Image 1 (cartoon, rainbow, N blue to C red):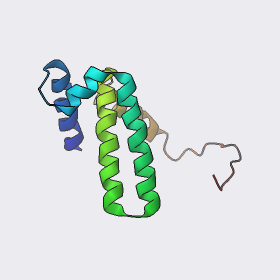
Image 2 (image 1 turned 45 degrees about the horizontal axis):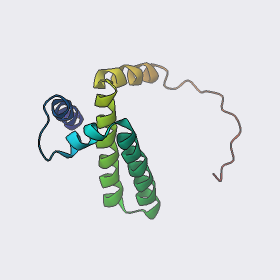
Image 3 (image 1 turned 90 degrees about the vertical axis):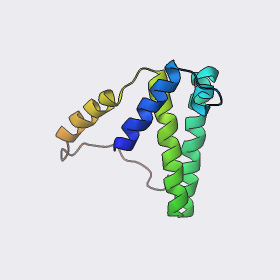
Image 4 (image 1 turned 90 degrees about the horizontal axis):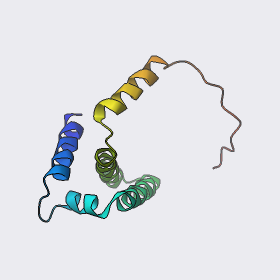
Length: 107
């Protein structure tokens, strides 16, 4: 997962040192609403690709979603370490069955 760390650092660098023609800088200039809109779009595209069952398209959409999520994280001052800490805590709970409410399995 070094790629994610490297992408995060590049995005962090783009936020502090504007680069002409950078899509990342464009997103920061447009602000959180634009960043979140892109996350929503990429989420939907990922779901559609997965539903269509084309692995290569799904992987590409997952990468787009991760990138836009990293941009949001940098914008909101959320670090990779912040996420890792929550994941670590969740991993400690792995295997503990939680009680879930009844859900319609068709949705």
